Every structure is written in structure tokens, then in C-alpha cells.
Amino acid sequence: MTVVAEGSIDNMQVASLRAVPLSKYNNIPRGLVHYVMRIKEPVILQVNNCQEAHAQFSKEIINPRVRSVMCCPVVRSNMCKGVLYLENEVNEDAFSVRHAEIMSILTNQISMALENARISNVLESTRRMRSTTYQLEQTQKKLEEFIDILCHELRNPLAIICGNNDYMNDLIVQIQQLTSTTLDETKYNQVHEEAIDVLGTTMLASEQLKDMIDNVLTVSMLENKSVKLQHSAFDVLDVIRQAILQFKDKATEKNLTLEESTPSGELCVMGDAKRLKEILVNILTCCIKFNVSDKNKITVFCNEKDAIDVNSGNSNRSTIEFKIQVSGAGWDKDQMIATMIDSNESVPSSTSAKLGFKISRQLCELMGGSLQYENTSKDYMEIFFSVVFDLVPAPSTHNTDDDATSTVSTVSDDSNALSTNSNTGSTDGNRPRGSITNGKRALVVDDDPINQKILSRILRTRGGLYVDIASDGLEAVDMVSNNFYDIVMMDMEMPIMGGLEATAKIRLMESERKESRALPIIAVSGNADAKEKTRKAGMQGYVIKPYMANEIFSVVERLINV
Image 1: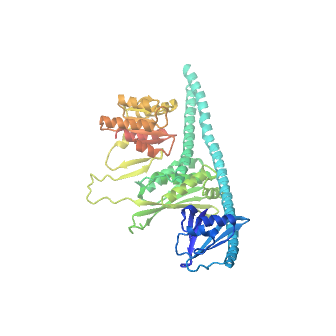
Image 2 (image 1 turned 180 degrees about the horizontal axis):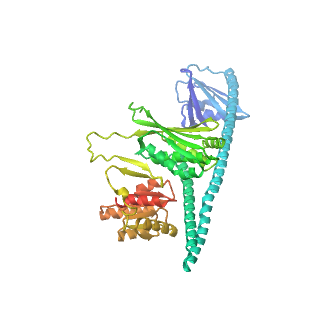
Image 3 (image 1 turned 90 degrees about the vertical axis):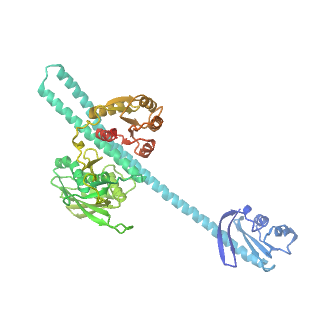
């Protein structure tokens, strides 16, 4: 039994209580309440002149000013659902049998209202449950469709890779046969060209597979709000050119014109160049995907619009507006529009085009802009998107030419990674690849022999490094303790001791030895969400599986001489 409301005629208000247990509510006689609930009849008390049978209840009344009391049960279907307790501090004859009869009618209405409210709550809960169940079923259905299509699309590049591996084995056998006898140069050149072609298609399939996995990871990070935007200076126009250049071969293959219409000069801002390129690449991918004939054209337009900072009132931000115009008669526009509409769903029913549009839309919103389209005419369609960037700070007036080393980041065409060009006059950009790593010592820590072989081969062939192998974190700690290394490639999940624990022990060992140099450790992981953990553990680099050789080597070059 709980007390749910109380009120007073003095202020004509009723206060709802949060179901206070009757045992903890001392303002009413608990014995009287239990008695009325048991007999299911109203009881009237004259506190100073009550019947002997009810005398014990009057003793429970704490308020000395109370003169009369009436306690009425709320009965429904011969069951007591509650009690209405009334007291009067003025008159001992305030309540009569007639009042009790009226209150019985009122409490009957109260019981009906309570029952109706209960039924209404049950119906509303049932409705919400059915609605939630339906939504969950639809989400589950879309997830199943998403997984089915994803698995199907993943199988395409995997089939290419597996088929090419078999074919490459046959080519190797042919090369061995050709070299074991009198060399047929014509046949040898033919086999050599076929081998190069097989390697090229395998590389394209691997990149396609990696892009699919990266898209799924990006969607997951966007849904979890764990995407962190970079903030560095870059040229927007350079990003546009790099994105267009990425599709040059595919556009030529489809006899498709792909061009830009942008302002002359530079358009430098502060923001995330990689994410901007990702938006452009996803949209251009979809545009090319839905081109069904040749001699069509895709044009990328760009212009800058100032945005006023609401806090300071200064125009220190810039809104960059983009327009991708698709023109010509050979476009499956209906399918493209359906793809853009479906990409709004929480779980898009396709992996490539719809997933790409979903990522682009969410990235635009994350960067303070939006993405939309306009079906202008039969032969034209325009996709608009905008993003907001900070303006590049003006250099201080007291800086000299010698110390003015402003940095502008550009997007690398082959790895989507950010590289840095400085105006200090350094010739590092002309240094042959691997020259700064040649002769350095690296430790590869991985429990998978194939991963050990791949990483070792990349470091040896691309960088000229000497490579040692450790199969778990404990072995790695021991090898670092007894040998000098310039860099460590550390897997995260390993038996005996994982990468995080091994890194922590290496950092502790360096601290105890008071070493001036922290050994560069690069985390190599298939978990895209573990980057913050690796940073806290003391790792300076992070590479996500699957990786390309350029990604590995760019991180190694950046850290090995730090």
C-alpha cells in the first residue's frame, strides 16, 4: 500500500506523491486504513467521542487539531483498489452517513477511472511495444539485406584475387619451364605481360575490397559519433583535382568527360582534406556508376562563401559550396535518385552507391554543411553539397622570411593519406623512396606467419630495413630489451601478451633506463575503434588492416627519424 496524493481545502490544491509507502507516511492512521480495506465499508470517526471499537484508531491520529475523520474504500469488482481518507479540524460532526453514501458513489467513479486508466496504459504500452517490434523487425530485415549484399559484393574482388592467384601459379610454372630450356623470348615476353596484367587486376580488386571495408567502418564510426575531423591547412582546389585524377582512367574507359570549373589560384582553408576528398570520391563514384552510355559529362563546380561567426561576429569561417553537374542522355537518373533517397535510411539496402551517399551526407553534416540534389531536366542532374572550414590564419607581421614556415597539406592520390609540403626549401621531397630508412632496424611483432612475411617484405623491399620477427608481445619486450631497433610494428591481438601490454612494458623499461629516445611503435590492428587506446598506451602510429604498402611505409618514414 502506497500514498500517491494529498491535498488541503485551504489552498485548493492536490499534490501528487511518488508512491510513498504507507509504512513511512505518518500523517494518517495506518490501522484505520487497513481496517477499511479489509471490511470494504466506510468508517466515520469523531475523534473525541468515537465508538469503543474505533477508539484505537483515534489514538493513531498525530495531528491534535483533527476533530473528525472519514475513510472510504475504493472498491471495484469486490476488490479494494485503494482508500480515500478525509479529516476535518473544525467540527466533530463534519462527516455523516449521507456524506459516506456520496463518497461511495464518488469512489466508485474513481475506481472506474483507475481501471480505465490502467487499461489505457496497457493498450498504449502494447501499441508502443508493437511499434518498437515492427521497427526492430524492419531494422533487422535491412541489416540482413545489408549483410547479404555486402557479402556478395565482397565476394567479387575476392573471386578476382583467388582466380588471379591460381593463374599466377600457372604463369610461374610456365616461366620456370621457359627458363629451364632454350629461352623463347617472344613467349617469355607474352607470359611476362600477362603476369603484370594479373598483378594489376589483383591490386585493383584489393583496393576495391579495402574501400568497401573502409566504408563500413566509416559508417560505424559516424553512427557512434567517433569520427574526429583533422584540422590542418590545405588547398580545396587541389583536393578537387586529386579526386578527378583518381577517376581519369575509368572516365577514359567509358568515353566520359570529367572536368572541373573552379576559381583560379588557390583556395586554402583549415579543415579535414581527407574527409572532403572522401565526399567527392563517393559522389563521383555514384555518378560514373550510373552512366550507361558514352559522350556524357561530369563537371565539378566550386565557390567560396563567407560565414559569419555567431560568437565573435567576425567572418573567420568559410562555407565552400560544391556542385557536381551530370549532363547528357545516357544516365540512369531514376536509379540514381532512388539511391540517394534510400541512403537516408539508417541501414541502406546496398553497400557501394547507397553507402557512399550515406557517408557523404553524414560527413557534410558533421562538417557544418549539407547534401542535396536537383533533377533539373531530362538530360541534367545536379548534386549540391557544402562544408564549413576555418580560414587560414594570416601570418604575423613580425615574422621574417626565414621563420615563416606555413604548412599546407595535400591529399596523396595513391593512399588517401595527408602529406605535408613546406616552404623551407628542403629537398626531402626529391629524396628516393627508402633512403631515410635504408639500413635501419625494425621489429615486426605478429602471431600470424603470413602477416609477418608481408610486413617484413614491405619494410625490406620498400625501405631497405633489416627486420627481426617476434611472435607475441612477451617475446617483443625481451628482444627490445636486448637489441636496438629504430621502429616496431606491433600487432594488437596476440597470445601470451597483446600489443597494448607489450607497449606499456617497453615504455616502463625506457623510463627505468632513463632513455632520451622513445622507440617508435606503430600499432597494426583490424579494429578501427582502438586508436585512442593505442595512443594512451604510448604508440605513436596506427595502421588499420587491411593496409596497402604505401600506408605502412608513409607512417614508417614519418616516425623512424623522430
